[in-house]
Image (cartoon, rainbow, N blue to C red; front, top):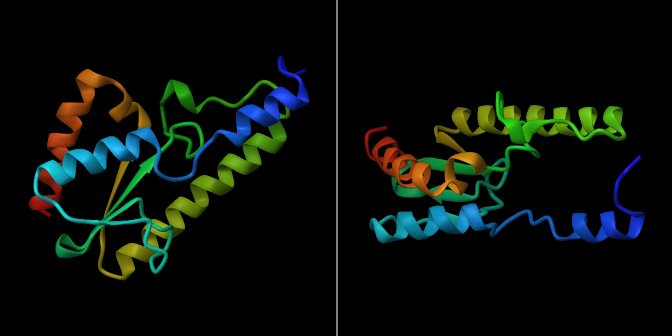
Length: 139
């Protein structure tokens, strides 16, 4: 049984954003401050990468740990209710992610996946974003 009423659960789920999330905004702001110019959510590419750096042929996805099932992450657990539904839904998300990454590789793009847990922790964020810059520049 869900601990929230149907109306409350619906309200909570309606606030889940698909783009322009706080982690995405933090990454974009950091990259811009380092002189990178990018496109956001470009529909011409598989998966509409959150950030596309054409100059570096790099696509960046900033994934929520729950929605994209980050391996070995505490935030990637299944809800207690309706487990079959969630297991199938989240598994489809992960399979679709893998397909889109493979398609981008085949198109000659370097793909980087950042996880919400890497960016939401303030102490981890600076280190992870610096390693992101290094990865972009040295790919």
